[in-house]
Length: 525
Ligand code: BG6
Image (cartoon, rainbow, N blue to C red):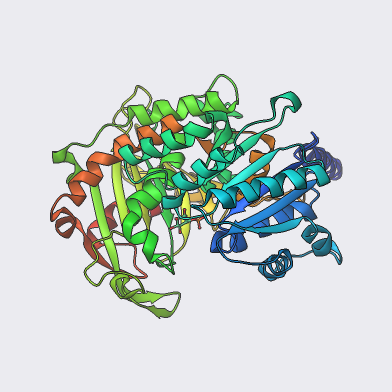
């Protein structure tokens, strides 16, 4: 007979075992190999990205003892500034971070500043001399990361200058490295992406180039592959036989903020669809690689991009909804229309919302629609992937419950809820047969108390380690542009955008015509 007391003690024991296992694995998750000494050179040091993301990320890594023992960070930009002023500016950028007394001073000793005119050979020669001296003083062995936190129009010129100053050469005898980090957008179409790549390759080899997509560094995005390929239960049903459709959404409440200069040229298709949305799609749709290595994983992603059913002139409009936000209310605050934002043209036809239905033409996904949605000034910030399973093939409950039983749904939450939840049907307690939908949840941070890395911390660390797993490879960039170009051509052809673009009030779920598909993704709308 079951002994309730005994059962209880068993379950306590189980809980303790799980906790111990958890602590062991938390320790195992820390980087164990020593990190190579290096210098991180940031171009665009007086800009927003440096103060908002890069320096706070580096400081956090320092606080968590995750930077190399010896390192230097050299900020470069056009402004004249002393090392001390740069340190003071960066200190205020990090003021919100939790640290112990003395942490900042110890970190700031490694911060330097060199003014650089981006089109001046002399500036880069001075920088090279400064870096060589610094290497000698700090024994950083010529290992250098060049982070281009500058407008993309400056990438070609600055990478050329780095090369001409001899800074792209790797110190072969000491296993040294020189790496260049670029942020999207990688070009604004296929031709410009190819040109950018040609210029980068005139000084750097592919293994030296790191193309960032910060979505890939989000923990919950990385977890998609673990969920799919470290469990035996999902993969057998991860296909057209069982899946009705897939929804991928990255909805934002923010507007264009102070980025109109960039966004007016990009719009939602170049800003989100060309990169972040494609990566989420690839991780959801790809085949298992034979081994978890950067190039094997990126090979499989490239195959997904190659399998996308191309849009033709006739099919763009039936599979794409574009919108632009009007005035409205977000989180209880009145907000202006996109066209009334500073720096935006009064007659702008830049789309701030996109909803695309696409198909992956291969054996696994034949006929399964993928709905990709992203937009600014929407009702809520919500980033997730939805796997909607098919209904049961035959309902034996039909006489009691009618024909339709709510189908299972797997939600991979990326933001704000970093969780996985599976919805399924159970019997409601009681004498009558009634079904209810229940949800089984796993919160990503549940039972984990170890250090956590934000996306920029992760990419900076991986770049120091030379790990390309979370970065775009050039073939992927080109394939993604090849897919998007016919869409851009159709929309941007004379008058095309005026025809397609629909207005939506800020704080809604996009244009009215999008609501049916949005409901598929969100479950409500
Ligand atoms: C950036 C886009 O890459 O991603 C922005 O340029 C967008 O327009 C941002 O707001 C969204 O990132 P996240 O991490 O907040 O979802």
